[in-house]
Image (cartoon, rainbow, N blue to C red; front, side):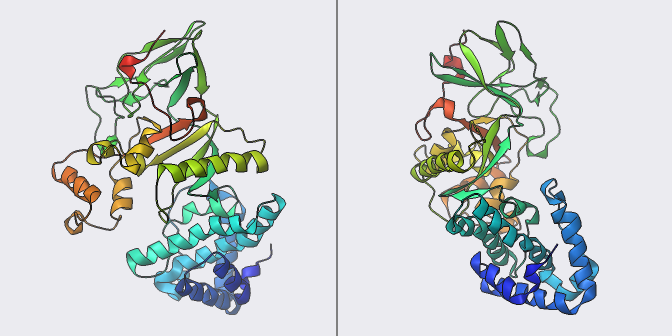
Length: 387
């Protein structure tokens, strides 16, 4: 394996290409220089690259970086950039893969600059350049995830705790819980907000017969019902199951957020994947995000972009917590005592915290079967035709 970024000039070229902040670029170039002068550093570097990155291990785990003592001694608070530099050795390979796939250089820059954005965000948070979410960036560097318009897309098999069904005649969609979900009596997942299991909950059942799909229905806002229902196979078709391919979506914070920009992005994404990855047949979008915090519908007006976005998705029970919304609306290092209610959403979140109300994120899906993004509505369960 060659290491082209051991050349400081090559490091500078690629750091500039993905729009790395100037201060971080200077550190990365200095790391390249020191790697050429210190055999012990280079040995650690090669070992990390081969065992963690080249082996593919980093695509299988989500774990914090383990900083070698010598690396920390040499680079101090910037030590994580030593490992980021090793990861950026993939950039020439990523660039070549883009060319092989017929993808243009603008898409390369638009997608890969997200790494630089996270380095900049870390600087704004802690006051020095570092990479705080190293386990995230393989998606960019292995050319698995792409930034298309407003959103990032990563095709993945669906492994949620639900199955989806569509009644074409009545244009109705419903999720049924799979076997064995442990839920509270109110339909939330046990373990929400990291709380102990309640004693009044229930465990879901699921059964398929020759005539019906039988399971616990889930309300579009993400709560399961304690009583199972039967969906007739004459009218209902299973349209989402384990292993079906979906586009896992992520929404960077660097541009305005509207239903129109999201819809445009998704339409572009469908064209993009059909053209460049025709063998990937995805059924829609999926995500776990603070944007799917159901309490947002109580905190914000119905006309808000966040609420309207959420309503395009069908939420389902997840053992979420306040961490996700706190991270994105405040930041994960901010204590509650230091948080300022200087926006409507921040004020509402702090009111919830003060009143000891639960706030938690959920998983959600959007299926193309249900219609065009931005125009979908879901039938309330009590109005659903369950025939």
